[in-house]
Length: 288
Image (cartoon, rainbow, N blue to C red):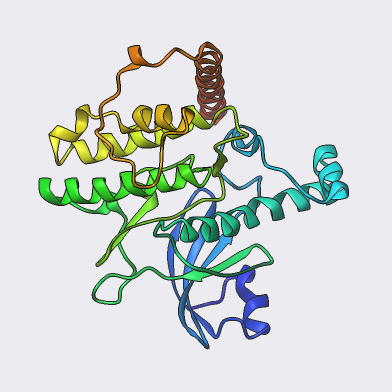
């Protein structure tokens, strides 16, 4: 196939031999299966900020620090250099998260290098050697759903203990190979300690998974692992091997009024953005 323009520099530098096939296109990046001297890999080509469908990036990036003060000042000023630096930080954030999560025992793709807006990483494959499917592409039995759900709940607990909240986790961001689920797509992850929006996004992530698995195993639909884990995390009682029940008793935990208000404000802002997009779409349709 014709080599995408964004992958040409890696081809010229010998980092990839050729592009085998496109894999998928997402709101943040386009993925390709590529051949390298070390085997078949996945090349994730990040889209520019103006092309990404990812909204409210500021809510996710709150609490991320930049060690280089000059870089930080440039990003704050939103100059041309600052925008370039912000994009680089956004892309490198995924690489850092992948290494941290692998060290924490979470199954994620192994990253190899990130250069010129391209992340070269492990290609997750199924038993036949084909690119592994996303959970969203599968029909599961109740037993399969329960087993995969249990593994993912343990993995998100490990993520939280490592200080990371995915922020966009759902059946579309989990692959399934012959060993089990693999969590993908982490450039938007949140700092669980420093980001005031972390609790709301964490609970939303788990609610997405609960809704998906509940379609196949109805007993999972009434569980509340998200709020249970966050309550344990807040009291420093959550460990990677802490037994989880999926039951949450809010009356036993003093309400965090400030957090509730933050969640309400985040939901309000998200709804305002949604309404603005709908209005813009309607206006464009009327103009046509």
